[in-house]
Image (cartoon, one colour):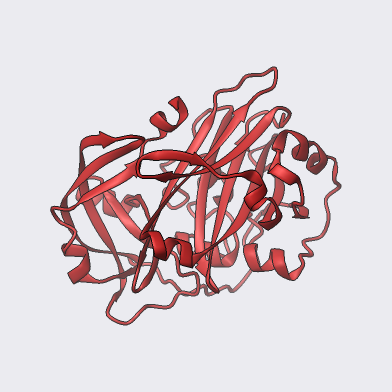
Length: 321
């Protein structure tokens, strides 16, 4: 069944997260080891956001930690906190890298994990990193944002984005001792358009006494005449039908369908690794076509990708570097 990209919100949906609203983060360097201690000391406050923060995170009708706009992009339900009904709220599934649309995809046991998600709005890419901390101990954690340029990881100076960043801290509904930290930032879409492909990576390292293994998440954003797309694993219905693969997920959060595309479809690809280049893995596109799912697809441009190569970040190489 093809899902609708229109966010039809009718009613509150079940249990949601009670966020600790942190407002803007004005911490030079965005050193989480210093900042999170301050965050955790805050009392729970009503979700009263100024225009800047509201513009980044937007309204969250079901209070699951994902804005209604973001849920349109992800295909999750903006009025149901646990879209697939597996007992884990949508934000926690994103942070713990399970699929919030698949009840058979459950979070694994890990001390730290990080998931990223984005949407496009008003000339900006709203990029978010959701960090799951298993025991809730945020001491010693350090956050790193970087880009891959010509196969080389480049850490973005923290002073570059510290003043354009916001954060929220949530208790995990599955275990109140656990915590989920959301860090959000705005990136001009003109940056992605100029590059054609923007490869981002986020890393959380534990420099404290617990020495938990580092967690990394990579995100590949593509610019096209019809908007921005993120390359993600094929969702469960497509993966089951096609045996895996990837899809280009539209990042337009208003549910609009650009001219020249077909609604209710996404561009699917079957790829295979053929080599490496620096901190990138090189893939060849063996098959491609529009498949039924929540989104939109241009059949001509999608099929034209067959035989082309993709350079995507290699998380192991980035951490090893």
